Structures are given as C-alpha cells and as structure tokens.
Image (tube, rainbow, N blue to C red; front, top):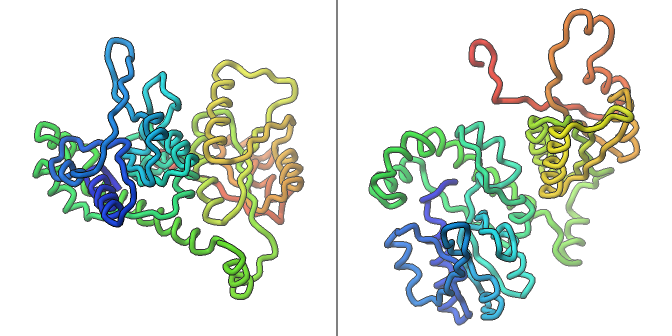
Length: 361
C-alpha cells in the first residue's frame, strides 16, 4: 500500500528460502534505502553490480540487464518494478527489463506499490492529493503467477516511520504531514486489498489446462454473451480519468474496452488537441484498450453505429457540461440521446470527484 511496509524485506526472505531449497538465486537490483534490517536479509545472496550510466553532468546507477541475461540464474530478485530508467539503456521502464528477463526463462520476484498501477492513477490522486508519475500497465501485474500482499495497519506503518525504519529522521516530519497521514494510508490499504482480491478472483476463475476448462464448464453458470464497453472521449485531459475508470469497469466485468472520439468532418486538430490525442493513444496502448476515431456531426448517432458494429453492452462518458435553458428546450442532452438511440445498452456517467459542490459535497 505504501513505502516502508516491508516489500523488499519480504522479497529477500522469499529469495533466501528459494536459495536454501537449492535454486540458483541472484539479486538483479536491490534498493534498501539504507535500512539495516533489509540489508541484513540480502546476506549470502549474489548481488550483480549496477550499471553506471552518464546523464548530463552526473552518473546514474541502473540495473544491468545484459549482465542478468548473461548470468542466467533460475531466479532473479528485482526491486522497484515501476522505476523509470535513465536515458541510454535498453528500455525506458524497469517492467520492460523484467519482460526481457522472463522471456529468457528466468523467474522474477519484484516489488511495487499499488499507487503505481496505471488504472488507479486518478483514484490515488483523489485519495492522497499526490499524482504518481511512475506507473506500470495493469497487465504487468495480471501476468504474475502469484501476488503477495504485504499488509500493515496505518498505525504500525507510522510507528515504523517515527522510529526511522522508513526514512531518515530529517524526512519523517514532512512525510507525516503529507503522504503518510493516517487517512491516506487507510485509503491506500483498502485500495491494495481490493486490488489483490480482484486479481486473486480473476486467477481463480481463469482456465488452466483442459481439466480446469472441463470443470468450469460443468460448474459455472452459462453466459449468453460477454460484456463490451465503449467509452466516449473528448480530446481533453479529463478524458484520461474516464478511460481509466472505464478500463477498471471492463476488468471487473471481464469485458473488452473500446474508446471512441467523434471529430467534426474535415476538422483539423490544433497542436494542443493533437498532443491530447497522442496522450490518449499512449494510455490506450498501456491499458490494452482499442481507440477509434470517427467523423460525424451527431455524436449520439455515430456512437450508436459504432456500438452496434462492436457489440457494445455498456457505454461510459464524462459528465456533460451544464446547458442553458434555451439549449435544454431546443434539443436533448447527449445522455438522453444515447438512451433514445441505444435503449438496449447500459449507460454510465463517470463522476469527477475532484470537483465539489458549493458546500464541499
């Protein structure tokens, strides 16, 4: 749920147990943050040297991916999965390095905080007031064979913080007044528990081999169709919130997600809107959603056509802008138009929880 709960410590314990059972284990990257108890747990395990990467006027230390591949252990321990690499190495992100290690037939134990999941980026920002910049695709977590939740009560974590087991004493007070408030930690703990429960549930129902498929076929209730979601998006930063919420809904429903932007016929994108479209393409790629850009004067009619072509069962959209009295009298709003042209499809309006009413509610 947060830094300091003991992820790296537990990873090292698991690595030590694997080594004692006879497996060839190495540490590909370890970040102890100067914690003596964590450093002690690494004793006896082979630690590969870090790669030194010149960057501007300094030298950064990064994981040495080629050295891990050349060493080819059975199991590699790689800390901080969401880390962004220095410019000049093989990949921009450490999770991409891990993909190469796995592709080479090497097992990996790694660590990550729940706030680094891409689809939770907006939710975590709403809960804590802090926008996390380093994220990993949710699909990376979904491919893990096992997820271990390191659970700690907020009070216990704060005690660890006060005793200097998380940060040095000169950083403790600032941490307590910002990210490490009890209400923040309690909220993140709940998010982490829900995420792990969701992952475990998905794995429990996932078919594994013919026998598993046969047993599921015998015991599971028949499903007439699968869900397919369509998120209507504009070229604004707020659309990324809609996309992430729609993706999490798709995961819970076990469905596919399409994204639709309807552009005016013959219109040209301004530089700002072009950048927003590029950002949405990147996010869609990370989450595994399908981005569709269609032209049309009537958003509801275009959405209806696309929904029928794609077999959509569920539409999500952001909250529409308030309209004046004349506009309300002259035409129906988009949500009502969608309900009229697609009566067989569920519609959800995604709230923006960063906005509050006049009473703060």
